[in-house]
Length: 444
Ligand SMILES: C[C@H](O)[C@@H](O)[C@@H](O)[C@H](O)C(=O)O
Ligand SMILES: [Mg+2]
Image (tube, rainbow, N blue to C red):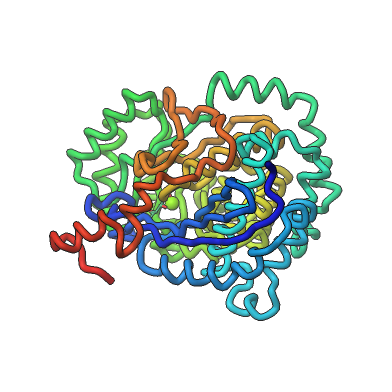
């Protein structure tokens, strides 16, 4: 039976104690606990749409609260009405005339939008019995583009141009799909280079990742220049100079500091510097790019880029050379499609951000779609990979020789196991209770 409407929305505050091992640590976020508001959209059948957004611990409850506040706009809705005019529905929930004041289209409310919209796309893909990437790939360009709200971006990308971009690559879609299923999508790993890891741990992890077939690595920088240079040397000694290596400062610097610091690290040949400064400073990024591009370093950003309008300006200002779309920061697939198509127009490669829980599971679908329908190329493109928390998902990512294999199960790959939910719901889950009792964690 096909579901016809949404009858309930349940949101749970799930958190994982990643700070215990300093997994996820960087120059600005020294002890993150990877967390997600986990949304389940109940329908009038057994089918449930699941979606998440991402936080790093405190504040996850605030996003859950925003999801609850927005749930009234979803519960009782007819699915035909949503999927028949997805752009219209997307505008409705992002522009509700009182709620928009606490955004608009940014911050907590936009994270909440992401969780709900991700769950809707998961539901749509499950109804069609396809993995999300395939749902997107099989849609006619007109239908796909009808899900995008072009407000505020039509000066750079019109509906007509978006359709043309998709039509351009249409004829070879089938062969690219086959190609990707046999070779997988290239990945890079961040899991070896968290800031809080010791040299010994880095060595072990790089050796393991290399044995698994990874040839691209990212390392955190920005806390201390001397220490960065020492760790960079160590990393390069482990992987050599024939491998790809990137660095990520997580917004640590002022513009000139970023340029100076990166000039000092340039001898280690990083492909990109990620988030060198405030994620809102578009012209600052452009200045950094202007200084660093001539010495072979690109600027990457996006994990905290609030919305399609900011991405538009980053592209216009040449503030990024690698576009790091984030499945949980932008307002779901509708807005991500807009950014992928704008990036295509500017010839900037998509390299999604996946540093968090469940993000690898989500973004693989977006890059696969990008390759098959938009870019038609893997050059300069790769998906971030993290070796953490996949065990909690019913359909976790499957890596092979350092590549993502193409997922086949219906949906957006984000359904979590019941026992993981029971363990990690905060603060009452079984795992959390144990941690509090053992004194390893203080409840906040
Ligand atoms: C706090 C988080 O782990 C971040 O450090 C992470 O998302 C990171 O920026 C990344 O690029 O993966
Ligand atoms: Mg990053």
